[in-house]
Every structure is written in structure tokens, then in C-alpha cells.
Image 1 (tube, rainbow, N blue to C red):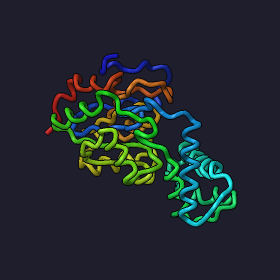
Image 2 (cartoon, rainbow, N blue to C red):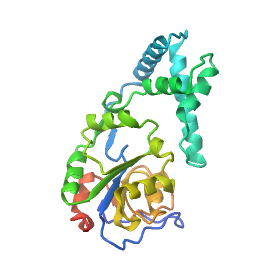
Image 3 (cartoon, rainbow, N blue to C red):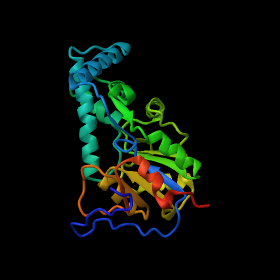
Image 4 (cartoon, rainbow, N blue to C red):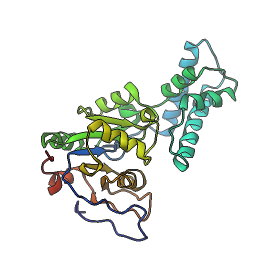
Length: 268
């Protein structure tokens, strides 16, 4: 599919294409299923085994014990996922996952502080290369080429874990290209498509919305979220998660971005 092809319009637009009024100076990238994907994830039973093993180790380090560490890990994880689903369906405010986990673990007889519960939850998270994530083959080359062309590059991603954990996952995947801004939902406090996470990225780059392009695989979060801010959006064709959303550009492989005339050189 050509990069300039427009998505078929089926319903009245929920988010109209952004008027492309000025050359781009910055490109914002989603991470999951845009720059990396699950290539060889361990089977669910292995995820559960590792999570239980790590939950038991954390509890032992705290001088605590639970007869079923698998239940401990599952309780914390399910509470986190439920909280994230509620946030995505309502106000898009990123939940305090440490507090969410603390309350859930209390219900099975574990009395932890918020910090202890947050540490246990993060310890049971099997992520990055260990979790089967792998960069798309052309991801790093595309990012480095766009940088050579003068574009500022930003990551705008919904993640329950940020900090060093997220940066280590980027390094392991070869995606630590020296981002000019990293807007991680759990650090910003808002999930895409909330305007605040895009505002954070634009402010960090020092560019207006009209000078930025958002690249992602979600019509709901990446495309509609960007376009509501006046940011043009390029959609990596994926199973659609919204109707009535028309991206400004579509592409199947990241390398197609490099052939787009609007991305031959960054605006000065």
C-alpha cells in the first residue's frame, strides 16, 4: 500500500485528516507494534512460571511468604490490567499501579506498602527481548536515516512501566537511538489519545503541532489522538481499532516512510 494512500472513508469522520500546512521538523513514533513486535513470545505457562518465581523472590526479600506465589503475581497483574482498561474507557489518566496492586494484594492477605507492591508488580513483568519482543527489521535503519535527514525524533508510547526498565528494553532492541523526547504514559500521567501526552512531546521538542508527524499502528490512539492536536498522522496498517478515522498517510513497512516526499528532508 502506497504511503500516500488514504484509508477508505466508511463513516462520518471521528477525526478528520490534519491539514498539512508546513514541512515537518519532527516525527513522533509509537513503540509497540510500530517499531517492535512480539516475534517469539514464551508460551503463557512460561510467563506464569517466571512471574510466580519472581513474586516469591520479592516476598522472600521482604521477609514475607505466601503459599501460592502464582496467585500473588496474577492478582497484582490482573488488577493493573483492569485499572488500565478502566482508564482507557474513561478519563485516560494513567492509574497509580503501585497503589492498585497494593490494594489487590491486601485482598489476599498481603500487607505491603505502595512502593513494595509496585516493586513486586514490576518484578513480575516479563518484557523486552525476554518477553519475545523484537524490533522490526528495518526499524533502526529507518530511525537513523530520518535523523540524518535532520528530523527530531520522539517516542510517544502507552506503557505501564517507564524509567530504566523501559530504557533497557529499548537498548536491548537496538532502539536507543538518542530520542529527542520520550513521552511515556506512566511518566507523563496520561494515556494516548489524551492531548496531554502529545503536548508533552511537542513541548520537549520545541515544535508546533503542524510541524510534527505521528507514526503508529492504532487508529484510536495514534492517529485520532494526534489529529485532534493538529498533528498529521501516518498509520502502520494493522487490524483497525476505530472507525471513521482517516490517517493522513498509510504504510505497511517502516521503510516506506523514507520514500515519502514530505520526509526527504526536515524543515529548517
